[in-house]
Length: 232
Ligand SMILES: O=C(CO)[C@@H](O)[C@H](O)COP(=O)(O)O
Image 1 (cartoon, rainbow, N blue to C red):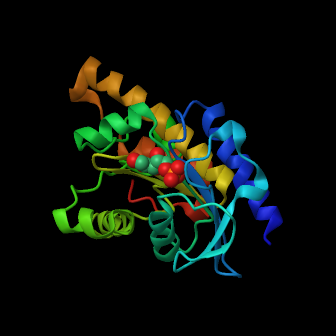
Image 2: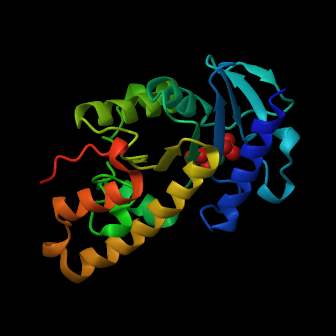
């Protein structure tokens, strides 16, 4: 079942250690077949150097295992909520990459400080609010998805333009039109988190790039159709 998507998700998972985005078994990548209404995700707790394509777990939108002998990632419910709310995405990544986690634990957005950021994220990468006790105790992973969606709705952010978020006290989730693109966005997010941390240390007063430069760089990379510039 979904052999081609399993291979794509498997290969995308292998990129996480390759780009030093994870330690041990932290993190996971998923992909979706929207026609079938099925999601393929990394099995929980499996070491990346022991992973195989046929271990990928297939679940439906209720989180039920449709195919697979292993448990799906413990973050599966978060992935499902995001696929439901963001109809254009085809792949999702969660990691504990250290610079992104540093901003998430500090409860800080990653501001758009330069063109590296602006090429991929049309504005700040938001951090979610802290979760409430009942949200944590009842169904943390599903509520994590809900709080991410709440953040984008409240801040009127287009997830196609800002393909990533920092879950407060936890870490980053990124997405894209495929598992591979979601990984690419994870690498960029971690890079801009580190660069922005150092820029803040050097001169916090000068951190925000201009809207014109952000518009130009986002337009240059994503083309006119994707351009939602508020800029001049
Ligand atoms: O954030 C967490 C745990 O805090 C998870 O993302 C783990 O880091 C990976 O869990 P599995 O995907 O292996 O279940």
